[in-house]
Length: 330
Ligand code: NYM
Ligand code: MG
Image (cartoon, rainbow, N blue to C red; front, side):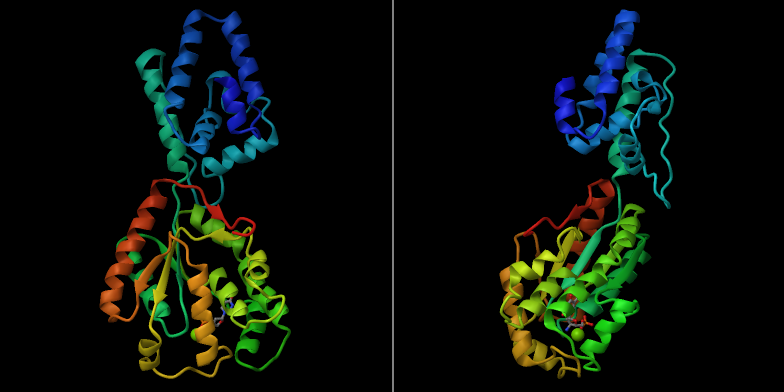
């Protein structure tokens, strides 16, 4: 059993725990040994690796002797992370059990429940699509409705034109400046990287982020230029390691419906040819977990679907799930 635990989370100095356990069991009473067995049974009822190891690490007493004695800095930081140690989250305390037996067993189950709760966070909900698909309208409507129903949410959009990098992107999009295509791609990505930490902090603090465009647009628009060397794989590289959305709404609009919504603006990329290519790359990027929303319909009809999908994602993240990041090659 102990060996299995080490395999599950090798970063955690569990040897400390097991050594101490065996010492106590040798010197201590048989009852103490039985209590340990009860703890193990209670904790192993949790299924995920993370919940498992978190339940272990946040225990303030017992074998761990106050939850800190001899623990390495790596285990400390992990413990802080899973117990909501960063700003904006309240530290969770486990109720004290007075004696062994049933009461003790329940308290260990509380540990496991609390560990799951500590992974509770806000959802990262992303809107993607070609220009004029209505994602900006739907994203802002969604934020309003989530906030009204008590779900703390913020609207983010990329490019974020307020930062120094964002201002360079804005100049490029507005055709006030020209630049190399590869360097522009990397600037769009850098604009996401510069907000990665804040994004993680907000999500872990329980804030739901509704994001208008992200790395998928980055890959779609650069690949759509059909330039040698700037293929999908190359474009994906600069996104690797960024936070992956929990929910993606791809706003699918037909060329006819998009045309009816008025002509394109003055920005770079707002041409029929470019939009056609972007649409093709998005179709190529599409994965099973995406929510493809029929955006040809009225605002109200689309809104109804969007809200249902979003609320499910919010619930899922509230129950507790770890943040995902883009893996190499995705
Ligand atoms: N765009 C957006 C990119 O080319 N790369 C990116 O990484 C992102 C996020 O910026 N035509 C393009 C797509 C859009 C343009 O976005 C401005 P918006 O949402 O139209 O303001
Ligand atoms: Mg646009």
